[in-house]
Length: 186
Image (cartoon, rainbow, N blue to C red; front, side):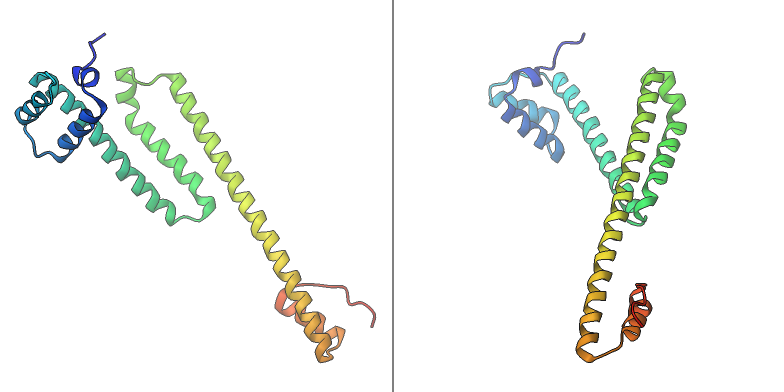
């Protein structure tokens, strides 16, 4: 096992946070940073700082890529109806697996168990999205029923105040609200 980085073990959290800011800014040379750390009382070699800055840049690149991918997926999902997200997510995952299969298997970074876990996660996500869509449909349906019932009650109230016949009220409800009621007494 490789020894831990002196930057991670010797620097205070505050000094490491400031180092990360300076690395992210990209305006400082390694020699400048080694000198700055020396002024703070930390004896860090240039090679150690170089390894840390390489790891930092790799991580920063991963974060940038993840953000870009998240934005792209977000833009795709904005354009989809609620129920259309699941097929798009499954299709995206399939494309990713096909594209990276050989690279991942050859490197040994992915195992059949990892693929099975990933597939299970997709299944769970699909199920959750389906349940969410079904719940939203139920909520909309219940809200529509309540709105129609309130409107029907309002039509009846106004109709009684105006002296309209029960047949006229039923016609309004059927024509405007789509509410079908029994004709009642003739």
